[in-house]
Image 1 (cartoon, one colour):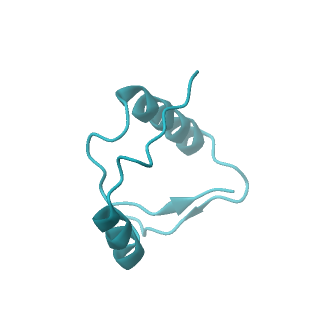
Image 2 (cartoon, rainbow, N blue to C red):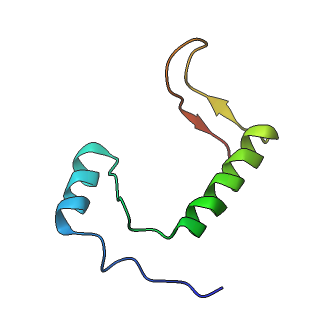
Length: 69
């Protein structure tokens, strides 16, 4: 698989927003195939979490914040 470089698609204002808010939406920057690969990895991790996983979102709360090392 060849790796496409994305650094030229991220604007300075995107970097500033990330530094300020900790998150930024980069619409249309990544090819759909990358999103499919990430989705498959997340699905696998949620289905079979490791021993160090933590769910930070309380039961019944909207959204989700999760980590697994």
